[in-house]
Length: 233
Image 1 (tube, rainbow, N blue to C red):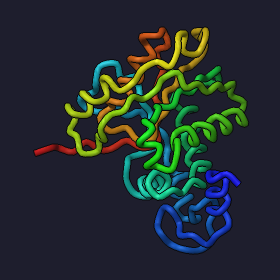
Image 2: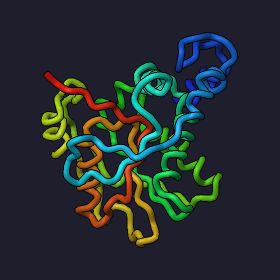
Image 3: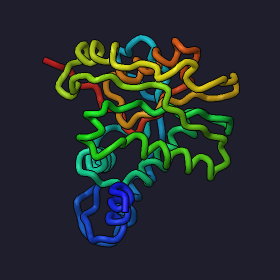
Image 4: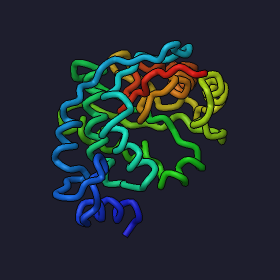
């Protein structure tokens, strides 16, 4: 059985701790009822870093990077809890629907990971989220396509970098895979860039500029969490 599927099934049937609060008990897709209620109470809102990098499209996030949402993302990305892709993908679908508005054709473009990051995070974490996001939107009647026209070049980890450092790394971090990247896209199609966490906006802006150079300017970016601005000494 493939590793990813086995991880998802294991997360559903074994008595693991809740990914949100670390408690044990009745879980569905790795989350207890209280944490699920906390997540369901979140409502997507427009967010924007200050200052915003050039080329950053309008951004919408489910919530701030803290509490239950932060714990779920850490469990999913850093601790291999693949079963969380389904609920997180469903939440990201809600963000997309809010960001786009009325039902219309949507092209989802996930931010690509480098090969090194994918190995460190138990595979293509955003690709899994995107599949569940697309499935949830299609069930709700949205015409959805998923494309991966951008590839990530090897780059240093930006976790410890400041805003200027992140911008410098992101500026040369992405390339188009092919030309044309996805084929013709009409004006009625909403091009939505997906990511999990918005910090400085440098990565999303770099991906948006790469797409824009190919005539595929994003309509909006949808993320699960946005970090709160903190002053640096």
